[in-house]
Image (cartoon, rainbow, N blue to C red; front, side, top):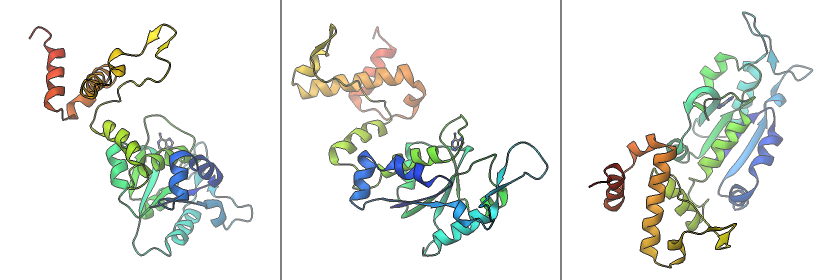
Length: 245
Ligand code: ADE
């Protein structure tokens, strides 16, 4: 899968993504990240890509033409029109299911905006998906694009090792992660929960399931509505809800 990022700050995106699991996947040729500098498509002698907004108001607006020509160049070799994501606080809020869906694409294009926005006409012409990474305002689309690329790449077959995908699966069952511990056995008078030292796999699995449920109820109770629990987990949840039964 190839991620194409249209941006005014290509080095920011390249440097931010070439580490850890994604760096390994890029080196193995499983995913690619290609950045293009929108400024290279300016026809202005000062390489401007922005202009004053019609109707007045503060800030500058990114002009349609450099973006359109950048996009046309980028897609000229493609046989099929790719999905194009525009990062914006008014987009649909990104989640794990969307990451999974996007991971099925061969090519995925991101348009990173700056200044006060982008001329609406080029958005109408090229964008297929408007996506936000949360209800707050960032200075540009680069960080959101990087967040999305990380989450999507993890869903591309071959990017995670078997061991690593196990970890993702446990979030994807809809519950939050259980707590983790490593050596030493006692740290500043805090011991590791006894059951984790027992070597009893079934008991450990049950303890982890219960702590996942506890944590989900404490931090993100609304997630509980979409979770499918197995018999044992459902019984534990009922015991919390009706402690006298
Ligand atoms: N651009 C600025 N803020 C953003 C956000 N929260 N999500 C996606 N793109 C953005």
